[in-house]
Length: 504
Ligand SMILES: NC(=O)C1=CN([C@@H]2O[C@H](COP(=O)(O)OP(=O)(O)OC[C@H]3O[C@@H](n4cnc5c(N)ncnc54)[C@H](O)[C@@H]3O)[C@@H](O)[C@H]2O)[C@@H](O)CC1
Ligand SMILES: Nc1ncnc2c1ncn2[C@@H]1O[C@H](COP(=O)(O)OP(=O)(O)O)[C@@H](O)[C@H]1O
Ligand SMILES: [K+]
Image (cartoon, rainbow, N blue to C red; front, side, top):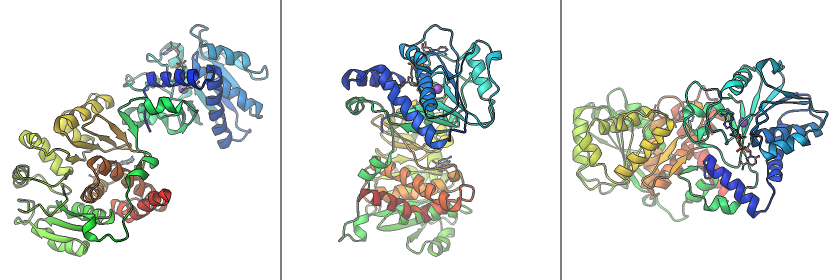
């Protein structure tokens, strides 16, 4: 699913109005109908609704939704926060359409604001994607007032005050919504850490924007959806054998950190791999052979950390390096000589990334099409600090282009950066996954998928989606707080099944 900018959303609107064709006011009615339906499904007519409407089309939506709820027997009140100037045509028309029975208050100062009962739902229709500058004056005051409401706040399209596709200046007034009902496509701001929490739980409501426009419009930002993933995952053929599904080598572990590589190994095996070899320091031999009997084990010459890679790497279809590796000088030197060889596809995680960050030469020699899996701190070590989330996306784009690689920037909405300047944001996963070792599981999954012949992009897409989906299934069974990293490979099979079932 494409993620459109505010300007592209306006263009999609205009295209739909001209080509469907449909009048602007009827398109607004369709959008408002979708919001009203969502609210009616969630709340009974006993719940009072307080609508706060600004001067543009977001305010027009607010009034249209208020009217639709009123017709269905809901108790609604409307508060207009506007100066009488800059009213959009559809705002004015929806103001005229408001039935007399709905109380309307003009808010000029904070003394015009109501005491909102706890059980009431506030609907925020102040500003939408037309916001052009930070909120000030009465608008900022209203937002601050509404943010004190202990009950539910629902934003229409986007929380008022939040910029759609640029950093929202710090210390400006932004609605903190519990729910955001957004039209047709999620907004980029919902997917980034600093702005995402303002949207609360967001839901995308389709409003029938023209499919031709959506097919043609070009955007670097896309969402990883179930539909996309179904088309990537390949079934296993009846007459396949273990050779069909690749032989991968995982390298990592050090004294005190054998758990990381052990979990990667389990995850790789659960991700459909044919054969797995794991190279660990001597200290890890018994641990690996006992914990993961399905894997073959090579031991490093060094007792406690990696000091060299196997000489012949030609039999492996993918090499995953990093979980539990440590940052010994020996290990850095081993990576330097590794990068001078002809290599199978690479997945680099954790300390392999830290070694890369500490050594410019190593970075320069990074093989093309490698997949890197940093969390934001590891990413910062590679590129230097970002001033905000949008700047971080620029750094991601330039790093991927410069090194011709794929970077999986991990987080609540993990973002896949590509050398072709496309970004894919993940939709699966939950805060239960914010626990040690979940990244090691991702490395195992990615190593296995790449070894099975998935392209670098397919590997990233399928890997992060399955990893998050396994986390979602695990959270349903175990609860978010109790989720631990090994649950992710425990439920990986269920995640695969969920995609396969939908494929049928
Ligand atoms: N395709 C879609 O997504 C559709 C969108 N609709 C609604 O239309 C909205 C966009 O409408 P508009 O473009 O009218 O935008 P807004 O409703 O966000 O309002 C823009 C108006 O507010 C003024 N303004 C902007 N920033 C301000 C600030 N900080 N302080 C004071 N005034 C400010 C602008 O000058 C303009 O007059 C969407 O968010 C959505 O709610 C729907 O009605 C129909 C379909
Ligand atoms: N709030 C969250 N929502 C969804 N996924 C999350 C959340 N927090 C963490 N994750 C996922 O968990 C993993 C954590 O990886 P990482 O930070 O490398 O952990 P570790 O180094 O302990 O293995 C990433 O894949 C990340 O996307
Ligand atoms: K809004």
